[in-house]
Each structure stands twice: as structure tokens, then as C-alpha cells.
Amino acid sequence: MQRTMMDFWVGLFVMAGIGALLILGLKAGNLTDFQPEGSYRLVGNFENIGGLKVRAPVKSAGVVVGRVADIQFSTQTYDAVVTMKVDTHYQFPKDTFASILTSGLLGEQYVGLLPGGDEEMLKDGEKIMKTNSAIVLEDMIGRFLFDKASEKKDTDPKI
Amino acid sequence: MVKQLKVFIESVGHRVVDSIWRLGYATRFILLVLLKSVPGFLRFRLITREIYFAGVLSLIIILVSGLFVGMVLGLQGYETLQKFGSESAVGTLVALSLVRELGPVIAALLFASRAGSAMTAEIGLMKATEQLAAMGMMAIDPIARIIAPRFWGGVFSMPLLAAMFSVTGIFGGYLVTVVFIGVDEGSFWSQMQSAVDFRYDIVNGVIKSGFFGVVVTAIAVFEGFDAPPTAEGVSRATTRTVVTSALAILGLDFVLTAFMFRGVS
Image (cartoon, rainbow over the protein chains, first blue to last red):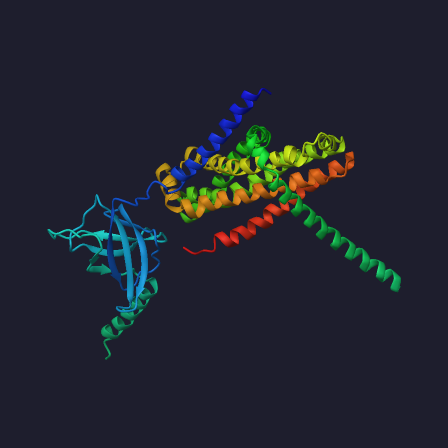
């Protein structure tokens, strides 16, 4: 085989290999939604975050507006401090409500932002005051059973 | 009785000492190859030639197998996932299993049997026909001229082949699940993208295939160089390359996986 022909094929091979890596990164992976700049931080304290993980999406009206950047446990307030990175395109009012929701019955957990009506917007590093914890299934079942038990007592005609 | 026992223990000891000696010999040989690979990099065309033989000519088998592995993964994943009503997660399944495990491992197994065995046979025959000795006579170092370029050609080709294997596999999974079965295209890609992390999954897969490339080509060139200079010796060395490479790939894959994916997320 001629040298130039071989060089051509090897060049093509190397380019195809690097192209494959790029496709993996861009099409299959999440290299595209990394936004190191153009985002601001919001902090929220949650009583219970359930199964929320770092890099979970932050959604508002179902649209992904950011990602969870960090989760810490605070020993002062004994709750979870969730830091979120939100795209600067999306500004939220001061009285925005943050709650931890689950997509579907078995889906992943995410932070849902419900904008309020305040004129002022949340700034970088500010804290979301109104939060709603994740729904823990065990708590819910416990409460349900407790309600059922007390219901029966109330409706019992003999007492 | 005592004499028989003595002979038995001696034979066991002989085998152990022999295999450890061979391991040390192989290690020294690979270190020597690394030391003498500078001329190969200075004359890069030597390595290009080996990339052509090890990489470009392995493309067909890698791409076709990747396509079929991805198609089977898509089909089987769909069969199971649709029982739970989460067939849109099939993209995640296909992509993660290919990028993390199957891409590097199967590509390396195919590479070992397609390119590794060819390397061993070529070097072994060169040795049997005394071409290596003749080179030495002409003051050309056979390790620098013959072995090192083959080693580096294999090491370069392997990660690229594994990446291409994964891409064609994902395409195969897409073909079967989205085009033939009719899983929603949007959720196929978006669930895949939200699950596959660049650093955690893709880079680790590339690191894995790099390790496999080093191990497979090291075994191949060593077995070729070490082959007894007879027809039978070369054939045995070729067999040993494939068997040892396959075992090394699978064992190393477990070790690497244990280090890389320990469920910390």
C-alpha cells in the first residue's frame, strides 16, 4: 500500500475516533448543559430532602432552569442546606416557593420553584425563605394510618 | 513414596518459579520497550503504519459488532423495561452499559483477537525466520524498530476503537428502539443525556480502554517476542495471546470498575 494512502486512512481513523468521543460527550453525555458562567446561586433550607442528589435538576413550571450544586447538613438549624445554580436568564421573585418534588411515581427527585408575586428579584447567594420538604412515603403512610385510627374513634356511636 | 512426594513438590515449585520468572521477564521486556520507544516517536511513520494495521483494519469488526451489541441491548432492555412502563429509560440503559462496560471490554476482546493475535504471529514469525537476529546483526535494534512501534500503535488505537464501538452501539440501540419499536425519540435522548455524566462515565470508559490497550498490546508483543522459533511455538504463542488477553481484560475490568464506580454520587 502506498504511504499517502495509509496516511489518509490513519488520519481518517484518528479523526473518526475523536469524533466518536465528541459525539459521546455532546449527544449521549451532558457536556452541553454545563454552564460555569451565566448562572447564579440560590440557597434553600429544607427540613428533609428525601433522595435529592447533587446535579439534580431545578425546575420551574417543568422547565429545567438550573441544577443542584451542593447539599450540606447544617448543625445550627439541623436541616439540609441545598445550593442551587440557576441560569441567569431566569430571575425569580423574593417570595419564590421551593419544594422538593418527584417526577413520576418512581422517578428522580428535583427542586421545583414556584414564583411568587414580589417585585424584587432574588440575587446571587440569597436564601429562599419558603421551602417545602420532600414527601417521605413512610411519614405519609404513618399519618394515613393515624388518621384512619382516629376517624374510627370519632364515628363510633357507642362511646 | 518419599521420593515420589519429593518429585511432586519439586514439579510444583518448578512451575511456580517458572511462571514468576516469566512474569518478571515480561515486565523487564515491557520496560525495555518503553525505554526504546523514543526513535519510534521521532520517526512517527513507523507508528502510523502500525495504527493502520491494528486500528484501521480492525474497524469493520468493531463497528459491526458495536451495532449489533447495541441493537440487542436495546431489544432486551425494552423487553424488560416495558414491563415497568419505563421503556423511555432504554436510552439510559444502552448508553450507560456501552460507555461504562461493554464498549471498552468487548472492543478490547475483539482487538485482542483481531490485532493482538496478528501482532504475535508476525513478530513470532520474524523471530522464527531470524529476521530479528538479522536486524541485530545490522546494528538495528529490533525492539526499537519492530516492537515499540507496534506497542504504541495498539495503545493509540484501542481508546479510539472503544469510543467508536460505543457510538455505533448507541446508534444500534436507537435504531431498534426508536425507529423499529417506536419509543419516543425525545425521551430516549434526554433521559440518556441526564444520566450519562461526561467525567464520571465517559472519561472513565476512555481510561478503561486505555488500560486495556496497554495490556493487550503488551501481552501480544511479549508473546510474539518470546515465542519458540518453530511453527508450533508461534501457533501456541498466538493462542496464548488471545487467552491471556481475554482473562487480563476481564479481571482488570473488575478491578478498574471497583475503583471507578463505587456508587458515590
